[in-house]
Structure formats: structure tokens, C-alpha cells
Image (tube, rainbow, N blue to C red; front, side):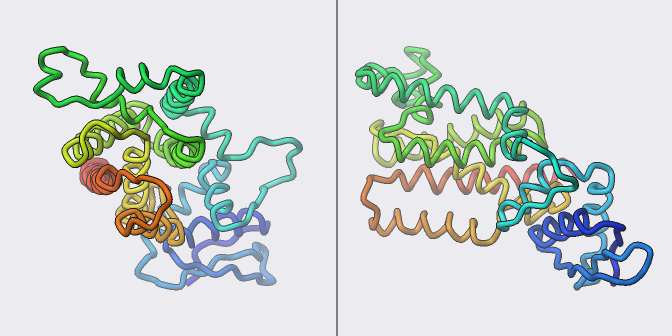
Length: 277
């Protein structure tokens, strides 16, 4: 079944990349008609989801999410040649203040650690039990461990994922919702890890797994929203989680925080899919 036809190839390929990433299989076909660049829908039962995404594309084909989908699949499609244009990922990030705020906070804390202040920083950011917090009122400690990192690889890994996925969520749902997702996933993953190992842990990875789960399930439950993780990335997430539990990594891993973060992100996506139709 033909979904849509374009007069130029570039928008057809761009939309095809995005639809295929959303799990809606389409084939590009060149015909001799007035609009020769057409997309053919493979599964007619996906017509409604494909139609909604196509309408959104027609309204604004220059949204960063379309180029982002092409980038995740190893391609890049330009609607017209543009000199010295910023990448879609960077454009999206620069319009995401909460994503940038968390990035900067983590970098400043890590820089302070490198300058010899790791001990005091860890003391003030370490998690404490709710009973103790009710006495000293240092409630920032519920989120504090998320900003604390122990190595360059640790912070680079976490911030790259946060920048990519956090900016996607903030672009779609707004800063308030990303902040809510950050707080919920950080609080739950930190508390779970504290119950399992005590206060000696840190890192944004519980939140990172949370936004991974959120984007993954949003792509599954509401593909028309434009948030998704490709199947290879989902496989990488689950494989990395399994490696941590198998104790095959060369570093200490907060497995409990990762798991609780992932599950809480998935459940938040489920809640959003019920509320925001």
C-alpha cells in the first residue's frame, strides 16, 4: 500500500529512515509519475500509526528527530545543502536547559574532585537514610549521588547518554517533565542502591538507565511521539546490565541502581502513555 509520494528523493528517504526506526516497515520506490519518490507500507495494519507520523513530518520535516533517526541508522539525509550546519543532536541539546544544567553540575562536581576536593564533595553528596534526613533536613542527599563520578570513563559514558536521550525527552515533553523524570529515577535508584550496599556509591547511571527505559518504552507504546531506541541500542543496554550482574566488568557496578532506574523509566513511560494520548 502506497503511503505517500514526494517530488524529491531526500524527504522520502528521511521519512523512510524514521518510520523504519519506529518499527513501521516501509520500502522506498522510484516511479515514473509526477511524484516519483514514493513510500510503500509493508504491513497495512500499521496504517494509522504511519499516517500520524507522516502528517507530523509534512508539517515540519526539519525537526531534529528525523535526522537523529538517520544518524542512529548510520545515515544522514539533508533536505538541501547547508554549509557549516550544526548537527541535529547539538541543536536539540542547546535547546534543552535541564539537560544542560545536569551536564554542567556533573562536570563541576567532577572537576572539583580532580582538584583534590573529592572527600568533602563525597561527604556532602552521599546518600543518607530518610530517618537521618528527617533530623538534619539535608534533603539534597536523596539526589546527590547522581552528580558524583569516580573516573573519566564513568562520567563520559553517563553524560553522553544523558545528553542524547535527555535532550530528546526535553524537546518532546518540555523541561518540567524531564526534571520530573530525573528526580523520580534518581531518587528511586539511589534509595534502592543505598538499601543494597550502603552510602558508598555514585554516578548518573541510575538516571541514564531511567531515560533509556523511558525512551525505549515510549517508542514501543507511542511510536507517533517520535522517541525511540533502535533494537541494537536496546540490546546493548540489556547486555551491559547482564554483564554487571555476571561480575564480568573491570569496575564496580551499581547493578541495583541500574535495574531500578531502568524499571522506573519504563513505568514512567507507561504512565505517560496512559495520560498523554
